[in-house]
Length: 74
Image 1 (tube, rainbow, N blue to C red):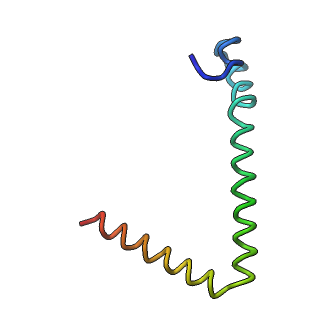
Image 2: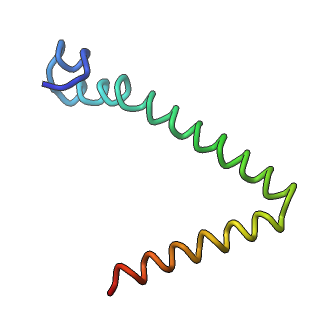
Image 3: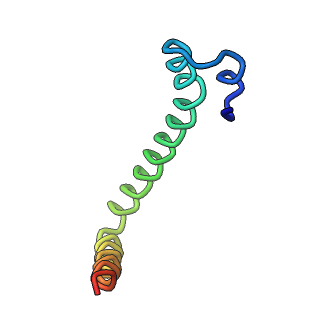
């Protein structure tokens, strides 16, 4: 059984599967996309307001990621 009440009530068919995706999967996925777009817009605005700080944060993040990846290879 799934956690989607619509799917539990109607079962699985090709039309039912498409409707289940449209009803149960797409709304949370679209909400997540909207949240990511809003976060990126806020980040873009902050980077335009303080470009030096944005470069320092990006450089530090790249350094940390590089050290983590290098540490995993050993």
